[in-house]
Image 1 (cartoon, rainbow, N blue to C red):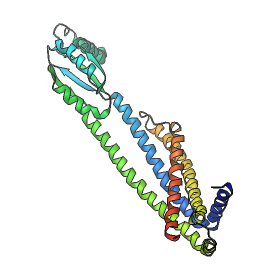
Image 2 (cartoon, rainbow, N blue to C red; image 1 turned 90 degrees about the horizontal axis):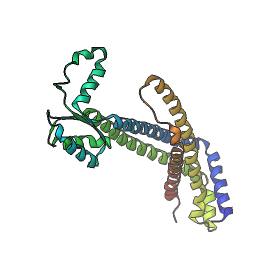
Image 3 (spheres, rainbow, N blue to C red; image 1 turned 30 degrees about the vertical axis):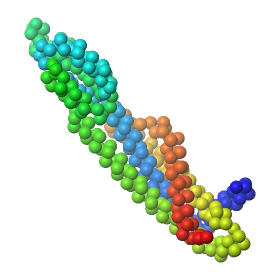
Image 4 (cartoon, rainbow, N blue to C red; image 1 turned 90 degrees about the vertical axis):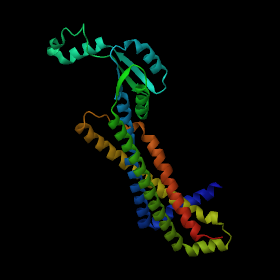
Length: 294
């Protein structure tokens, strides 16, 4: 394709937008709305994943040994060392457990005096899984081992977090698809109005031998520009909303760390430009397919 043809497509594409300012503004607005919602859900998803990673680091499995089964510790350590689901583990002996208990009691630690000879506490392992979803399966494996009395882990926290992330992902995908369909429909109608307004010009062009590809060029560019403008505005809005939301939440919920969006800003911008331009072009092609027939 020659440079002159590309210049003609771009010039005519911009001209079409200015000729139909109202519909073009409506198309850009729906792209902005769609991508803003997408951006908000991406931000929520990133923060949930980040919080899940933090919980993964703190969630552990407590493996309590049976009384007098300390001789099984080397065998259990070997099992944990070779297990692919285990990130790290630590063995707390009955003596260490008693010392830790004394520290927690502080000034009242004298209540435990004399227990060193007949320690009622049992040794236990603190096991950290590689991923949150491995917790249940790993706990079941540990329960079957010889010398194990009880296995504790925060099952409700794990299940609830996994459920929330799954529901959010499904809802997000459904909402995004719905908004994209609306955006494509409005852009298609915008292009259709331009086609109808220029029907005589298009008829003359076809009469003198212009191909459908040549006629379609400016309208595809128009859809592309609408998508890019919508993506740019949406990106700015999402960054602004995220900045002020995180500023407020950081002051309100001090015990939770949030994602620094600047780490992902170029990826989000790239995603917005790609999806925005694709929605714009797709809307144009749908309209052109109905209008232009060989």
